[in-house]
Image (cartoon, rainbow, N blue to C red; front, side):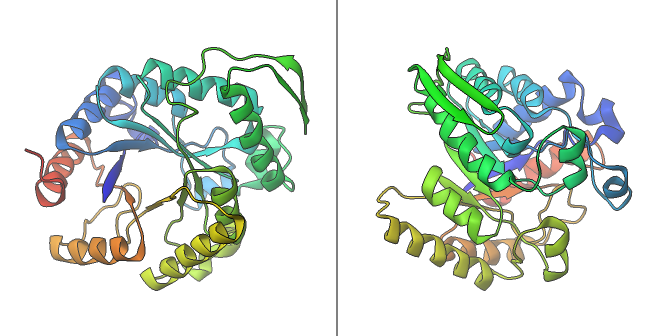
Length: 305
């Protein structure tokens, strides 16, 4: 099992603690010292007020945050969790990802999802109702651009009539792509276009708001993994797929970490179900609390040194 830990760049209510260049660099370096395999950031470029009032959040731009993290570290991977492709022109996104991958020495993991906040799409001038089709199309377009070859492709809102991108990513053919979401469409997208699937815990009551399927137990997750493998077999896919999951009780900015015993049991069950990566959130009352939580998690689960 490998671990990606949240860099709390969503804590814009505490900019000095978490969102300055110094704070991001310090936290990323602490995560690397603790032995985490990756650090992740989220994004919301222009969220709606009603969603914020109901508990939603802002975040720094993910590429700015991860570029700072890259400069402060040597080994830890840089994980977008998640990047909404349908907000953007795919070639601009491909350029940003390739630039970060080159600058970091090949450490990017591109976690992506279809998105679910319709008012945010509207504010960004992005079509909401075809976001799934445009997400699939974006992945095809980005991989063409990352090849370094001349691209001829017409899509929704763009036309490349012989265009070339440089530099190409450090990782060949491109950074690993993990598709977020619990829905059958997300599973198909992961198998058809990506190297991993990133489901997350979601109670049934939250499915309407987030527009994806519920995962309320490890059994629910195991069923999804089985569907993923079945679809991959039907498609003739031979390459393995990572499964990256947010453990129950360790969502972003969690306030109370479950006991070591509870987490050990859960991690073992998740690994048995087929999970290969875990994306964990730790307490973020302040920077000291966060870094102490990194060290404690490391001592309990990462066995550094």
